[in-house]
Every structure is written in C-alpha cells, then in structure tokens.
Image (tube, rainbow, N blue to C red; front, side, top):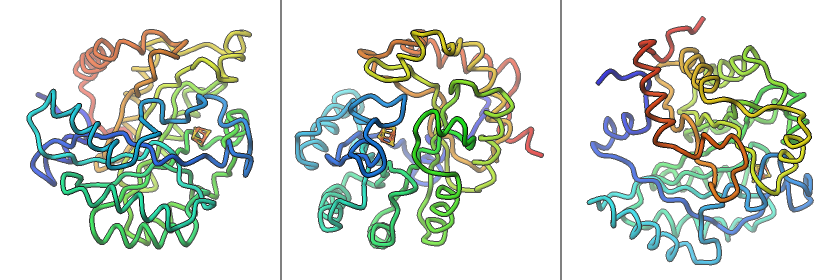
Length: 303
Ligand code: SF4
C-alpha cells in the first residue's frame, strides 16, 4: 500500500520492529490554566477533565497501567506496551519528588518502552527539565506540547495562556536536552482561515522536532466553546473541508516529521459537534481514500 505520510506505526516499526500500543494514564495533576495559577476557566475547548477524559484518575499509576494493559491484551496478542501517555499536565507547583515518583513508577514497568508526557511549554521549568533528562537516560521520554495555533488572536480567544515565544523557548531547551517533542495543533479553530492553519503547520514543521498531532476541533459539552457555537459565532468543520486541509497540512510538513495523529478522538459521550467525527472508522477510511486520489506525499509542498 502506498505510504502517504510518516505515521507513528511506521516510525515504531523502523525503530523497534513492532507496533507501539498507547496507554492513556493520568498523573492526577492539575492544569495551571484551571487551578488559578494562570487562569481558572481552562482553554475554551477543554472539558473539565482536561485531556484525561478516558482515564481512571483515582487509581495508582501501577493499577492504571495494569488495567490499560489488560484491556489491550484482550484485543491484541502483545507483550509490548510501548507508549505511555500521561493525559494530564505536569505543573511546577507539584513537588519534583512527586513527579519523579510517578514517572519512575511508569517507566519502571518492563513493558513500557517510552514515556510520553503531555504538558504546556510554560510548565517546563529547569527542575522539570533536569528530571526529564534523567528519565530520558533510562528510557526515551517524549514531551507533547499543546500549541494549537501560532496566531495570537486565536490563542487569546481560546485562552491558551502563553505567547508563542514561550513555545519557541521550550522547544529550544528540550532540543538541547535531547528530548523528543511532539506538538499538538488544532484545525478548525474559530476565525482561522486556511492560510492561517497552514502557517501554523509550516511553523511547527520548521521546528524540525520529532512529531505532530493534528486534531480536529471538537466542541464538547460543558465548554465555553459550545456556548459560542450555539450562539452561531462559528461553524464546525465539515468532513470534506477537514480532509482537504489535513492533506494540505501534511504536504507542508517535513517528510521526517512523525505524524502521531490525523484526527483525534473526542470523548463521544460529550461530543456536541462535529458529530461526523464520532465515526472514526468512516473518517479514517474517507481520509485514506482521498489521500490515494490525490496521491499525497508528506512534504511535497514545502517551500
Ligand atoms: S487544554 Fe490543556 S492547557 Fe488547556 S485547560 Fe485543558 S488541560 Fe489545561
């Protein structure tokens, strides 16, 4: 089958010889954009559980790991649990000892090959960076940064809570520390044009970092984004529209950048729009078909 983009599965097969199975865990941490340190409302699109809507936050890391692994082992004949994702954020207010304890607990599992931590660029202080460097000596540590957009007007609207320069600084320090970075971008943010979306993609591409997660904007129950959507302030993306821009995004990313996600899984129970995104199988099949039709090549439109 024609390879249209450099997926995480491709990368894993090249580097490990097998597929990475993702485990979503929760370190029971708060977010500075919710706990009052930066803001108390959170990003406009984020549900109260942050990105941890799928996890068992009240269990220990070891128990969460076991449950998550058992679930996968029921479906896949594997002993390789390779990607370990903390779905909540580390923040400087958490004592470094606590962070060290939970990350070490996760990384010590012999079936976990990689520790991937989702966070914000403004949370990477020197103590945390030093901890990441130490953990990275034992097993690979990846850092996922929720940039979403490079456009400051949109960043203000979504209440991201930090400037682009903070992202640039975090990228530079993480690169120096030899930590792989995956940047999250959201497609379909209110008011953003196709040109602006592609500017964000090109910017992320130019960081020359490890990977990117491309996420369709989901409008979730209980968010202020839903309030604006119901007032008619913006439209949710249509599937064709999303696929067209996704293809353009992949064309402007370096062929070496690993694509960790091309749509995103919104928690279906609270997904309000776009509802078509709830049918992941259909969405992925339509994306694949369209990629074949246009004979997509990642990086073919870099200039
Ligand atoms: S999206 Fe991330 S940074 Fe924003 S409020 Fe939610 S958990 Fe915090």
